Amino acid sequence: MTVLPLLNRIAAATAVSEVWDLAVSYFADCGFARANYGFTRFRHAGSIGNPDDALYLTSFSPEYSHFYFRDGFYARTPLYRWAVENEGICTWRWVEEHMAAGTLRPGEAEAVRQNARLGLRAGLTISFPEASQRQKGALGLAADPGLDHDAVDAILRDKGPGLEAVAHMMHLKNCQLPLSTRRRPLSARQREALEWVADGKTTQDIALLMGVSPAMVEKHLRLARAALDVETTAQAVAKGTLLNQIFLLPKANLPANPDHPVPSLSN
Image (tube, rainbow, N blue to C red):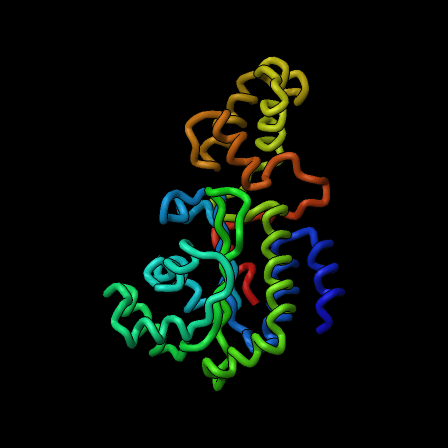
């Protein structure tokens, strides 16, 4: 697959699922059919914040995806720590070397052994540079069966620049698009009410603009706060903006039910 046309297709995509499918297809052509991606705008210290506010995408099997994301296994891996603390590319040879040297934390070493039992040894992780200290995205690519660390190094020498370009374009495009997280999505009326609040309108103003009663406006705002898991409407506006879930273009494609975003967006 030629990289430049692919980058243009990713840049023109209108949904996270479309971006992911395009990128995963290229990764598979490079020898990495199994990919995990995570992105949060609510990072705090060494944590990604509430996992329910993060975006998770995978092309692994549903069984491994559930284990890796839902059960929080990712946070126990040494590459998670590396990704939080660093930017750039790290091949999984780094893990093997630190495992052999005995410098991994006990929980990290056990995570390495668990992955090894599943045949996950070689691959690479990309930790993306971010414009905000609260934002963090990372991509893990597992080498196809039969490929070892030397094979991954050879792939990087041959296709590294293109692979990095596709990964970065995928991440940057995801930063622009409405993010589907584990939380239920805002309804159209909840988004509209939040947008009017963001424009400085009062409850009475919004009631007139939406053609409903002030009590109904308050209901929409209350449900929006609950959906976003915040206490105030100001927080709801801020969080909805960070997740690109308000002021959407008419063609914006938000999933109807993101309660299970990993399986729904995986290959």
